[in-house]
Image (cartoon, rainbow, N blue to C red; front, side, top):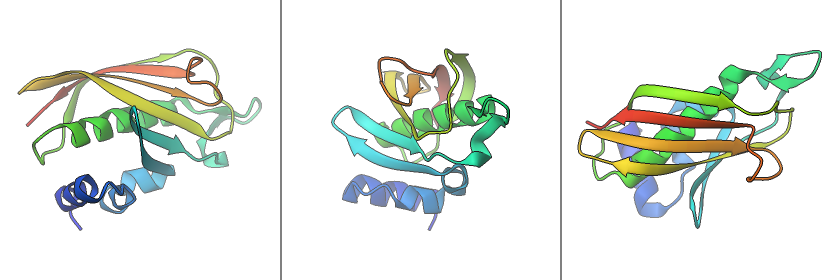
Length: 143
């Protein structure tokens, strides 16, 4: 199944498990996508492969950044009218506190969806959404 077909099917059925099949990157990271009243909710399952510092058992910053970027792209994909994939122009990740090996959740909010460019803010947390471990501000090219 192509990414475009998976997007169409997910929008129609509101079942987002097929995104992982169409976008192997999501499955490789161990991310699941579900819908919440506020928008899409992504979960990064706890795994030792996400550890960056074995002494403190802290999550690797690259996994956190990739997780946030994925959350932003998934939210954009499902809010836009087009079937094309957004392309990152500029992304800034602010690491606010260390993440431990535990399920981590992320949500994104599209702050501006233009014809050519979209702005997105995303955050990820482990226990409390009000205490994020990292946030992302991103600009994406919309095709």
